[in-house]
Length: 357
Image (cartoon, rainbow, N blue to C red; front, side, top):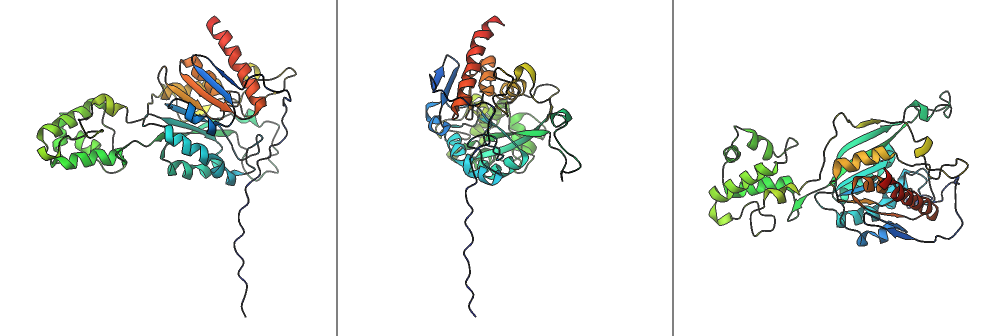
């Protein structure tokens, strides 16, 4: 007896209809774009804005979590890869080897999106946990009924954009260039003036590989071009015409400076009081507003003065405000007119107040 084999049911797109909000404006916006010497913010879909922004040194992403947290969010984590992929594809077009991505989300949301980030060249560095403490859920969770431990955390995952030379990952390119010289591996120690660290660290093919500091790169490069096979010169050339300098090599990885005493667990209560952006009557405008001190911490650690920061999902523009305070240039977009209106009011107030501080 022949049985009819049913085709697998196609997975339907998860809902993007948001839940009700405490604050929603109905008035038309008076302006949909605002800028000064450090900041440019736009009301609209950031996918349509990226091509107008300068290349980023840092991207701070705080978009969909898959919890129907706002109009346009997905109903669960299964829809997040599709939600994020157009953005991640665009980030990869404009990122450089110096670019760091800070990806805010829930644990399951991040897990769902991670393969898409990997697909487009973003490499995982570290998962940082914001622990809001028990006060975040006090009185709001019936621990006798729930089937898990109460959640008091969000995560902010650090990624860097993979550096490549002629489409070859940086480590493989460096080791390959030394191999092309015909010199023995241990000659790298002679080049760098060390006993064994250069060959062991800079030419290691596994996870123990170290990025040579610019001064050591210049020593490797100079030795290779002086003693390597003449027919293979120039060695360690990024453009194929001349040997790379230490300065050029230093720009082949993302910037990062770890503040003293800071770990990957951030003990910080949820926002309350004056920093929580509210309308008269005390209603919070945005349920997922991030603390300025945490935004300042990640931006300061991964950028220098006048570098460019992208905030694709502006919300109340917390990363943009932090960037402006640090003297960075920020580009941001927010698709929701209500959030854009109040976020812009926040920026304007910041502009007026900062000269007085």
